[in-house]
Image (tube, rainbow, N blue to C red; front, side):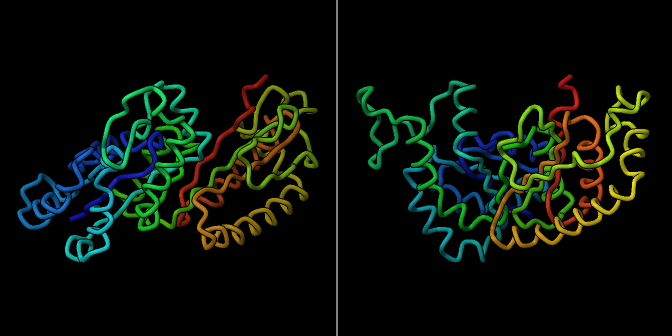
Length: 299
């Protein structure tokens, strides 16, 4: 039996995660009252009356009024008797605020009160920033106990699907690290989300080769040209060694996401080539990885 509790910040993708897990054959239940967690676990583990052998249960702040009971339950022998994994989906505050503004849906903490009373007037509604801060406070104990924390700030739906498949279908190992490799053009600015930035404008530039100018780093002739120089090979070797050295250190620090940005002048040739090569070199590790070319079609 694989029993997964799906939780996290509102707007971080819990509903999408449950839908994806359901596609993978998990029996999914969303927004079950916390008081029913124990009876539900007994049904899943003891009576085995649920279809399949994989269950995912959505829990969030819509049931915040009974979080103290949930905290006590998880601190008891519950997880020993009913082994469960906790998937916590998260994103930066500014990402959550942007997503809520796009959907224009009210935040579940907007009218929350400790006694469960509904708001009686407009002045009792919290701002979105206050809602997010309160939710982080309320869900802190779930994040602390999570077996998997996914920062979905830069995820597309396909990225979330691929990562959930790796963890909950392929049974890949997970240590709360997701590496995002970006190629970019300096003429458009450095990506603000970048943690590590590498400037590859010193490498031979295909832009000045007439037959290569209109192509990109996705095309083999361009990649072969860029990587066909000794300076490129030496740089890439040292870059790969350094990144492989750094990733475990960031993992040990508890980081959930590392954004590596590779930049050249226009973001079409050299940066794309190096970003692709780095992605290939790092793939297959015990962390999630994706790549994105931010400027390849800018011109």
